[in-house]
Image 1 (cartoon, rainbow, N blue to C red):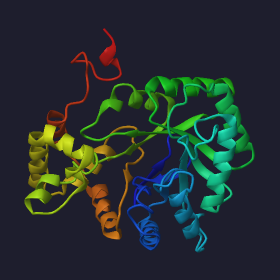
Image 2 (image 1 turned 90 degrees about the horizontal axis):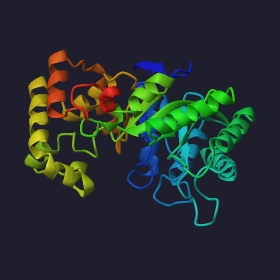
Image 3 (image 1 turned 45 degrees about the vertical axis):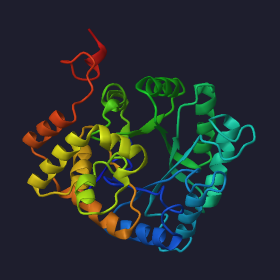
Image 4 (image 1 turned 60 degrees about the vertical axis):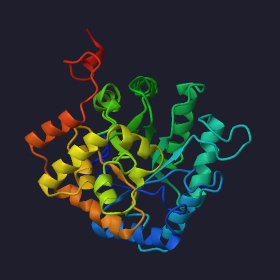
Length: 330
């Protein structure tokens, strides 16, 4: 396993992040525990979850599954860099969502109980809260850190401007501030390259891409269809993307075939090659899917391949020639 620092912090994390969203709704508790065991066997030490994962808001299904796994012993908690999130509704009563000081306190304590631990390594804001001042948010987070309940803080789905606001407010309080940003990022969705990725690099945040294969569209969906198999990429919103980008996806799968690599592994390897990316979140539903993902760490994409990928999936640039973050400037 390869490791890197979590943003500008001194914390070492694996370059693949185990996503746990499927634990409960798609993957049984027993299979979820097996996946986490195998992750440790592979050296994956960075696990990502959220208080709303598990398809039953307010119950924390996925956090409970992880907590019961920690409780089986074997220094599982000590070997894990644990990240969870707050913001989305955990109930239908006032103050059971967003980032008020009250909800931050209650949400953190509830996650600690479910996860059966006394601290969270990385506590992430699932979304920006435009109605709560940063002074309140950082004061509440500061209390959690002083109490030893949280070590580091991160954001998710923030704009570049939100990252700047957060960091400057933290700087005024002489506070470490954010160390990570978790954003959707993949070959089909490169919008964070315009402002979010440059802001993260400037402020020393590690970027954690979610949906690295765009809901399965980049996992070899056309090949699987041709073989009569099913794929996440041919249903729901992913199917709409596939319909619109079928020709591009076909060319991508041909490129991967010419390389002798699985499209899913190439998609992950491309993210790992991007400056500022800590590691993409993989969300295996089975142990076998987890095992397969490790191939991405062994793939080195040459300059010609990277250039061809840019041709197939051009980076966003409103004014054409200038690279981000100068794409808007003229």
